[in-house]
Length: 347
Image (cartoon, rainbow, N blue to C red; front, side, top):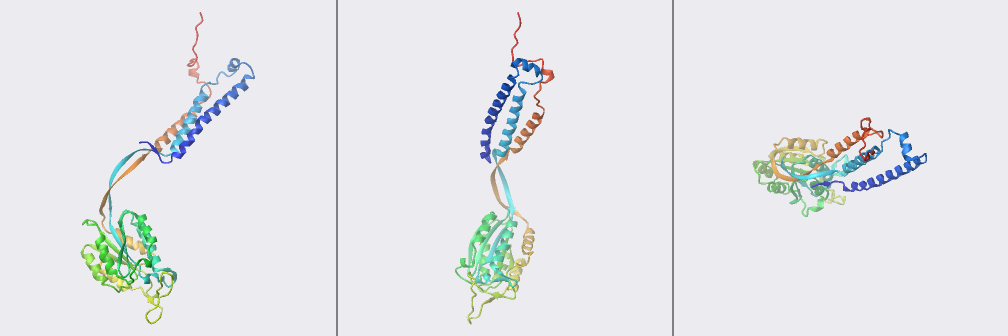
């Protein structure tokens, strides 16, 4: 099947007959001017080298060049061919903390950037680099919630990130262990696929035993990495409307990055701890993941149409070269032949 990627350019072909008609009118006007000097047969004898047919041949070649270029612009495509390929990579489940403490400032020197905003920045860059692998997303606060199952579509993963806020968790708290357990259940059943969990949190865990969950995951061959987000010096806890929350005594609630707790989670899960405030956070995570061996994820069948642009490009090139050798004078070796006029013999 023959198709075009940009068929709207083909309308330019309608200009070709218009050009041919205009050329014909110009030739008629030229003939009338020549006729003013005398009879046509006499004037022709004054221009014996002038070819009668070559200007039309040259016009035909030039119109063919233009037509070929127009077809090139329309990007012709040949028949689609099915291709089977096997995707190789790893499976990564990301567990993102969306508790109220994630609304606090990520660092004291950047109070305008919250921990959740910084987490999204790190995740977006990481997902871009995980193209070709499968990524899933779980959010957690007082409980864990599936946000996006494993997918190889990086664009979809980034779309989910845009809709995440601390308001999507109905129960507040920080249940890291529940998020790790849910992530373990979301991986495929393929025993050969390398599986990895990335927990992004400020490390304040009040709901369950995250280190035990990470240890259980690594026993099943699933490494658990931790990304610590926040300031070890602490920052006021605010809600989604930037209102400072208070404790039972009425004092501003302060949230500190529990870096030691995040490190223990990574250690129990045989993974790596990364400080999310570091400029090399994404590079460190990518380096850790790229060390893992890649296995077959799935077989994909897709159709791809062959581009015929080069074929028409070569045709246009050859026509341009040929047009350079067409001159309006007669060829010396063809002078003695008359292909279009029948000679009559004298009796």
